[in-house]
Amino acid sequence: MRSRTRLAPYLFLLPFLVVFGGFFLLPLVQSLGMSVRAYAGPRASRPVGLAHYRFLLVDPLFWVAVLNTASYAALFLLVQVPLSLGLALLLNARRVRGRALFRLAMLLPFLAGNVLAGVLFTVLLAPGSGLVNRAVGMLLPAVGANLNWRTDPVLATVAIVAAVAWLTVGWGMVYLLAALQSVDRQLYEAAAVDGATPWQRFRHVTLPGVRPVLAYLVLVGTIGGLQLFELPYVFLQGLGPRLRGLTVVQYLVIRGFDRGDLGTAAAVGWVLVVLITLAAIPQLRRMRGSQ
Image (tube, rainbow, N blue to C red; front, side, top):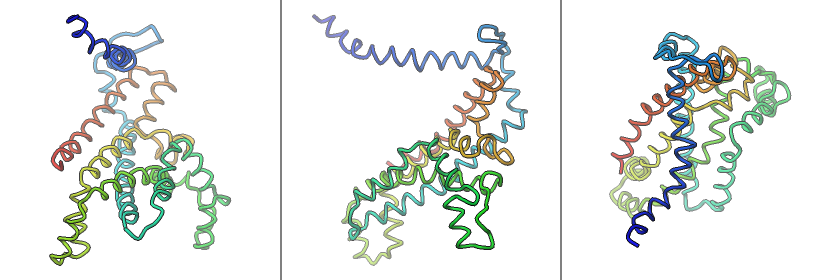
């Protein structure tokens, strides 16, 4: 009886351990082994040590992908976090009615996914016939309605950042709205009695109250930005103008699937893991400090 009692927790954990080991841990170890081998086929390989990693250090395309990915991640955060916070503040106002409907409307784009967003923005930004270009032509006749958002590097960057913001702003707004509603109203009343201005109440009451959620959004947004792939690939239909569509994941796909260089692709994957870890550590420390 005692032996069964001791074995019971392990038996309950066994299904998870089998799935985790077979579908996560084992492929992870195999990819690490692949990153130090050169492949001439699915079964023909030889060890090359850190040659793939040294190649990445001197490959200019890889560094273009890193710079593109880092710039996209930074732009996403600069757009998403302020917009999410602003919308959350608006919906948190007592005079606003129908909050549930607004929350649903803002959250629905997050359920669409990157591929659908890429297709949708391709239609919206089509030269001449796109809804956005038509609006630009009406408001700014000098610019016209024939803007080609997929051939100009600046416009392509703006379009991709706008598409990601459309997808994620509502998601961040829901988190921040929940954080705002959990802030003690007595703190606002005490600050108002002390003569604090609206800006001072926002700075000294609202921001400290939502700081953990802000840190979480920055962390998740950074990780999502570093993993960007589908949206620029669908919208730009390739690498785009001046390689603006080349991200780290896109570089991995080119190496692994287009060129069949599985060893280098595995090395890129592990470099991406390192980049995400280095970007996440400061945010995790901030989250701990804000608790």
